Length: 178
Image (cartoon, rainbow, N blue to C red):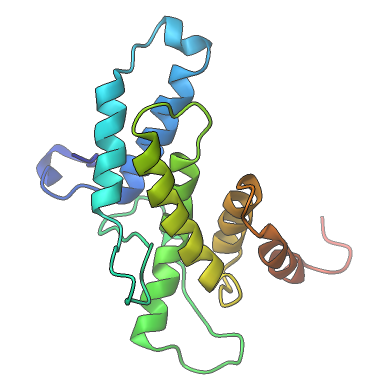
């Protein structure tokens, strides 16, 4: 299963929190902390399986490869969306943009160096997430989402971070800001 935030919400697991846990436990298992903290491989494999089960697998859907989460601790992971042309966004567009930062976070967790269990499942799941992010990168207007997307695409050898980096650079302030 996945992680949940509070004891009262045991049935409401969070993709967001599970991705953070996977990244953290994978980092622990490949650092000097592994001498003090034991992370069982089957535990990490269950986290990867949970994330794979919560990914949109319907290739006909515009949400293909994305992740959603019902509960997010940090409001940055639920960005607003305003199309670059100034039009009113559709409900589908809002949902797609809501999924970008969570999907990027999951891809980061699944691509963490040292993830040695469930590698083929993690790789397939990460590749679908990267495909989703590549399809959306030119539409993203939220700086946090752009930064996460640029980071994960830049870490991937076949990812194209250039578009995300250019969009991120276009959002920077110009002038003498401190």
